[in-house]
Length: 418
Image (cartoon, rainbow, N blue to C red):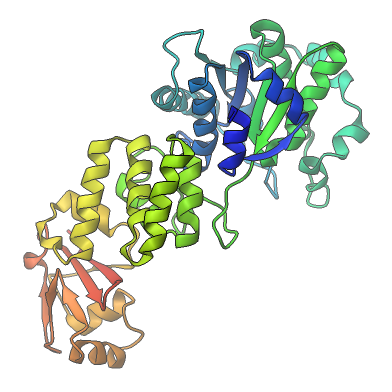
């Protein structure tokens, strides 16, 4: 199985400029590039799909180039956006570029320039004049051609500025520069980048009709319900632990559906597909044990952070589901509580029924009483059947944190304000 067949079998490939030619090209060492947008100081789990593809290509012996868009990030990619982006301050973009470079260096090998390099496109776009840009690049793109691209046409009703309109020309210029200076002949990107990818190819072929260059795109990952991958109710799942805790990512994958377990393993797990299938088969034999979700969550956190952190997340998750939350430290309890229905209580105490309702484990005090009388309520792992029970902050984890549980899998997080 060649690298393209492997990526396709994992459900990663979307479109090719020329599939047969690309497969032929990848039989020998190639230089392949992918761009990353510095719109935040951290990449997201969605970006990790492209990182995983680059890693597989690098492991197959190809040289990779990661471009962090310090130049294009000053403009903003209109792809997938319904309205104009707000400009980021120059210093903010520079800081985001620095942070993302460090992140990429954690997952991809840039220690040997023959294996991979990482560049900032501000290094060249910041030096070119407007006249040079219009003559050398703008001239190559007829307006009708640009309007035919979905990334542009989808924004015509709501409006698009010339600034964002010109983004695809900038991305095309990146590929042309890498092609001429670094011998880069393959570009990859997400499915929403297809218009930009093909425009890049168009520029190279106009500049050099004999050019041997191609592009291909990866599918945008969604869950079994069609929802965008890597999004929670709190927003994007960032790779930076200061923006999204490792435990929160762990719990995201613990809670994926049985249908999605195998798909996500094939996408993110670097092991051969035969090995992955053994885990999928084991999970499908006993889905109630959630074996697949546990292995998936541990693997993802190991890749994003470390195996030690993944082990810690598994311990914390187990403590919650086995009613052993009292063993958690205050820091661990704060992480476990992140993402659960929560309530910040004033004062030093609160009645049990009020806590149940405020943590959204019951719709009313009447319903809360029914749950308590039925023995369905636990506070920090201990069953409570006293309707008059009062929760005192001093008895909590760190003198303030409580986990309420209704039944087997409904949780609430009670935090007394310090």
